[in-house]
Image 1 (cartoon, rainbow, N blue to C red):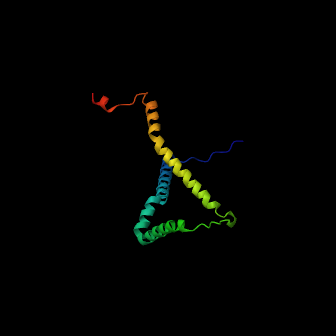
Image 2: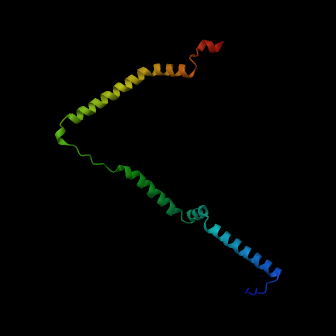
Image 3: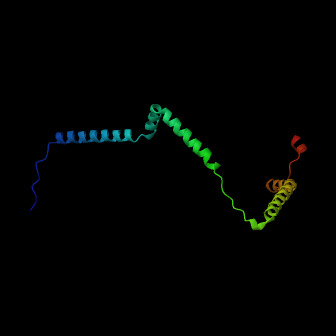
Length: 130
């Protein structure tokens, strides 16, 4: 058996109820947006509590500056003798030789790359004047 439907409300009452629901949802949404406006809340907090914000910024800055100042402990094996100094000297010599070689080869490398990218022609100063 089918249920009896309850008496329906007049159309005007339904329209009024729908309008009230919409207004309620709109108010709730505006309130939610107001509560979730984080940049506005931060600006207001900064205006009201400026010394606290500046103090926090100074503390964070000091922490970032002092953090790298911690010394790292390096343990040296006493059995190596003078081998450590020899390795440092060899590394320094190799670095100096690489730097000298790079400075000597730089013009050759530049000319080679210019020729490859420029289609094999190297522009000349006098050719640009004509």
